[in-house]
Image 1 (cartoon, rainbow, N blue to C red):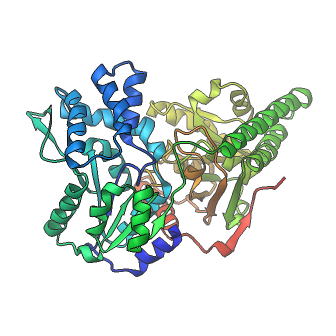
Image 2 (image 1 turned 90 degrees about the vertical axis):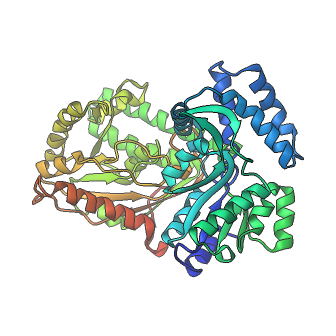
Image 3 (image 1 turned 180 degrees about the vertical axis):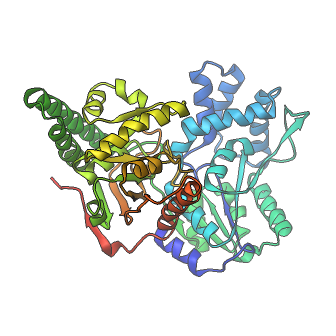
Length: 486
């Protein structure tokens, strides 16, 4: 079954909170196991105990566990958590989510979750993991309900013991049924998603089961039970083709930057050198990486220049995407650390980028003042109003700086909505994967009459345009290919 068909099934199926959508966590919403990142982190920091290490080594060997065996293995691991404050454990897993787990998130899983939320379904994560492992992703996705293995907590401190049985196998199915009864959910009309054979009981508890990246036994069961099967794209390890494409892409962009810097040194023409790097460098780099860019309403990129182009920010690739679609006559705002980076730092300075200290609000305001002058002399400016890359396609809160700058300079705001650049290169990933980035350029917005009193409301309305576009993407027949092919 394709993801597109699965979304269509959700949209045409029963709507409302009486329908549940239950997602397994490890292997279903993320690629692999969050516990693996835990062990890696402990080893890397040299904090892992001998008993923990032995548990980590023998866990993959136990492939035929029953409920009793799984509980014993789980309890063995939880013993190491004794004495930690619950707040400490929650903070630890939040850090691990940001640094390690977030890049394992399946984008297809995010799309399914959002489709269910849009349908008004009651969405829950049902997993044998602890809620500490799950909370970061649940918050990012907007999932309010977590059915997880419970740990004993006394006076805010973990005792190292389980509270009841882990939510694994038949126990997970029982937890789902209990939750459904409490929430008045009709399980016969509800959806379930999982990847392992231990979840067969869980999938049998719902009327609309789907096997996600199923193991051999679950795949066989899915075929016998006529359950749809969806295989997501692996996130843990990029294919060799992607690694080769990444090297090619970065090499091409680096070579073009060096050529542009050399050109400027000889001819003293920085703007022409920057435009050469921005257009040709990104064209060649993306072509070598197998990245295509499809643009809806491309004419809006040229309708009103100079302008402040605002983009939603998911990936390090967004900077090069901006360069590719703007082509010429543009600069931007980047974090101050980029100024000292080899090769790209000198390019950014030559491009008259503004370097902003995101930790210092006053510095940020001061940094944006020269941006107004650049706009007045005819350069367009690219700004990500979220301020930092998001972990998922979710849109963050918009800061007001870009809008104040546009008003001061007397230029319009042009919203540029990126749909899936995070799939091509996740926030903390170094590898560029082949694929297509979809972009929709909205109509320029005149901000000259905006008052300080209305600024927050107006900015939120612009942000809502992004949300609405991402939720209801325009018809693909309006696409125009904006990236050159080699």
